[in-house]
Amino acid sequence: MAQSLISMPEDLLFDIMCLLDGPSIRSVVAMSCRALHQIFRSDTIKYIYELDMSSTQDAGSGKPTAELLAALRARERAWADLNWRSVEIVKTNQSVTAYDCVAGAFAQTDGREFSIYWLASGTKKENNMATPLGFRVRDFMMDVGEDLVVFLYEENLPGGTGRGSLDCRTISTNGPHPACLSESPLSFELCPNGGSILLAEELEVVEDVLFLTTEDLHGVRVVIWNWKMGLLIHDFQDQLPPLTHELDVVQRDVFILTSGADSGKILIYQIIPTMRSWDDINTVPRLVRFSCPSPTSRMHVFTIKYSPDLEGLLFVRSSTFLRYVHCRNEGLEVPWSEWGEQESRFMEKMSRQDWRRYAHGNRIVCIPEGRDSTWIEVFSFSSSPSLIGCSVPGLHARQEYFGHDNPTILEKGEIFEEDVVTRLPYHVASRNVSEKDLFSCMIDEDHLVGLEFVYNALEVTIYSF
Image 1 (cartoon, rainbow, N blue to C red):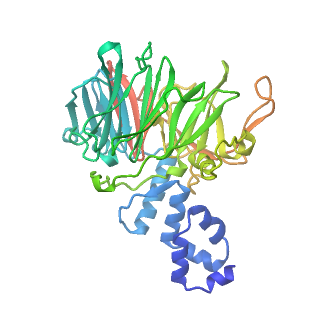
Image 2: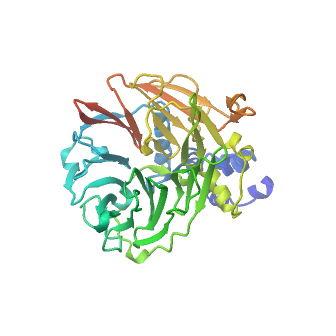
Image 3: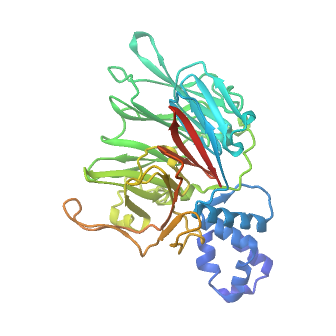
């Protein structure tokens, strides 16, 4: 096979290699023969390979490949050693009811006013803004690339019933979002008979699909819209299996729910989000960034409680769930023995926080359980060459790498009938920020964000890479 390949013109071989993903380049091409390995050494091929191995995507900056490759390697080394290039502090309002951190923007609300701080510019006032709202906000979420902020609020209706509403606005102007065809907010009726009080809620958006998960006295409910077309896709009111818990989005048309039924299950759903209305899409240009997470490499984190003394976190890649969606076998039940050991990693719970922005792509940030709140830990589940084999202290952080040959083992006993072994490789880096007393951390592609209360006011520390 190698002989027939190397007989082809080199420029054609180069074009073929550019179409391969990282694992294919490594397993099929780079190790086939010396001639093909010479092509592999080009900056373009190495960039494709290392980009895939670090579980990121090119954001289309248009810069020379050699410059991008050098920047990718430098950024991977910086994240591996928690070697941030700058630290900035933003003091926010005292009264905070909800906050979020997405793509270089930290936002908060006190329920009446919406404030946003652009992390790339730190504390420069001209890049921060606060705008009043005409309703009482329960929660919100942002998509910076779409210039989108979605506000969730409740309305009391005649007869003692209630309605939840979702208002799609632009981050930049706080006006109606031009890509949303609906002239009125997206809405859903709250359940009567004692269920008209939302106990918890969570918003997620992927492209043009908006997911709302709520919990009331009747249990968990999932409502899904195409927010650009203003259309309800599905309302799972009273349709979810018993003991269903939180939702997490895998991609635009796939989401998962956890279930406490039997010994615990992960339920995978696929929806039809309706066609996009391309002619009416009018969004601001995407911010220029070096790279963004690959959807198939995104990590999902599950909190598992087996007993009062055993609680842990289970880490699984999106690609694991997508494989079973693509097999098109509806109703398939996949036992743990077929995927758990090789495609997941279980750890004893090490974080005091429960917040959706502690995970971004293949990285997870936490404040370790059992240590004081001056430590930050970052777990990476990428296959970046800069992480593999890294098990020595770095210049700034303690580092350790756990491969397939360093499994986590939960021994059989009162809870498990046999040993539970998980082998998904990961890298962990720990760094002390001794001047801080953090209660929570968040992460995006370029920042760690630490939160603490100073004199009853929320203070945000931004660590930029």
